[in-house]
Length: 216
Image 1 (cartoon, rainbow, N blue to C red):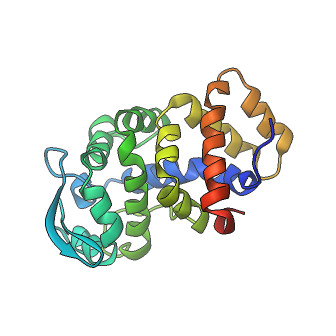
Image 2: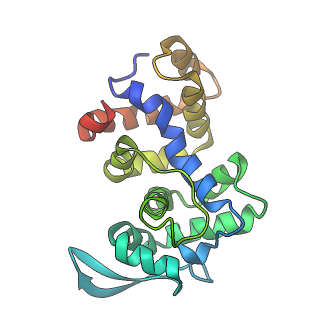
């Protein structure tokens, strides 16, 4: 099975984009879910007041971090805060992963709240890029290909990362390294991951169509 052209760039970044940014950014002792995506009941609020090109957000808590996110990351902050699944994903990390976010915990929470994955990843990326001096913790930052995928191919990314076989297929592909076609094909032919090949192909097709420059 031959992977589309964007796969060489995607082979290393796909798993990191979904898992590493969340595990590294949300796993520190200083991290609180209220600082990014959830209120005390796992909910988020967005007012109906229009602002530049969209909604004016009401952050889930009044902290220096949410103030920075509202000011510097308004688009992705509103996208997360307006989706209950995004707030619930952060609450899941706080409740299910008290000792830090590891792979089993990621799979559990992302499978429960798949629609929150892309908004959460993009919010944490902006937090780590533009609000690192104000928000607690820190961690992984997306590259241009990853940002494009989570903006333009979000549904396909969410669907894959929320399913354990696809999550592990991406991990296998990532471990192969860029350009190791025999290894990648071995991952795709592994019986444990074969059911996820269509989902991976859907992401790669979207990358070729929507993100040819950053992911090419």
